[in-house]
Image (cartoon, rainbow, N blue to C red; front, side):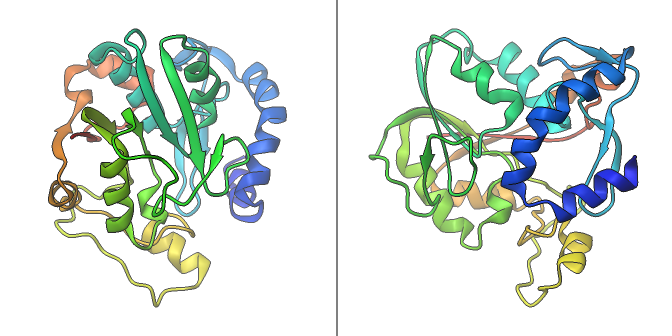
Length: 254
C-alpha cells in the first residue's frame, strides 16, 4: 500500500487527485475502521492511518475519513481550544482550502468565509497570492498553510498577506520546516522532480524553511508567535491523534 500511495501522489496531477479523493475516501474509512487512532476533526477512529509522502513516506499519518495530516489535526485542535474561531463573527480568507476543513468551515454561521487559490478546483476565487484581488485590511483571519513553500517570491506573498489582513487580525501560516536548520535553503538550479522531492520534501516545493522563517515574517511587519501546541498535550493524546510532537504553529498578528 505504501508504494501504491507514493506512485499515485507522484503521477496524478494535484487537481485531479483532489477530485478522485472524494470517491475513494468513504471506502478507505470503512476498510480501516477501528479504535486505536482518532481523527479529532470528525471524531472517527481507525485501526491505522495511511502512509503519505512524495519522497520519503511517513507511516500512519493520513486520516482515512477526512484525509487530514498531522498539521491539519494539530491546527484543528489549536483553533478549537485556543481561539474563538468557531464562535466569534469573523471574516476569513483561506488559501488552498484543505478538504478536511472546507465544508466544516463553510458551514459555520459565524464566519464570512472565502477560499482562494490559483489552481485548486475547490477554491472560490482563483488568484495569485503575489497579486491578490482583495482590498487592504479586509480579513480578520487568514489561513495560509503549506502554500509559501511553493511560491518563488515568498517575500511578495507575505507582503500581500499583510496588506489584506485587518489591523488586530491574525493568521496561521504553517509551512514544512526543518527545525534543525537555522537558515532556509533553496536552489533554483535543481529541476529534476525526483531530486527536488528528495531535497525539498516534495517535487513542487522551491525551498526548505529553517528557523529564520519566523524572522522573515517579522521583517514584513507581523508579530509572530512560535506555538508548540503539542507541548500542552499528553503523550497519549499526541499518539491517539497521530500528531508530530514539537511541530510549531506560526501564529501571526497585524
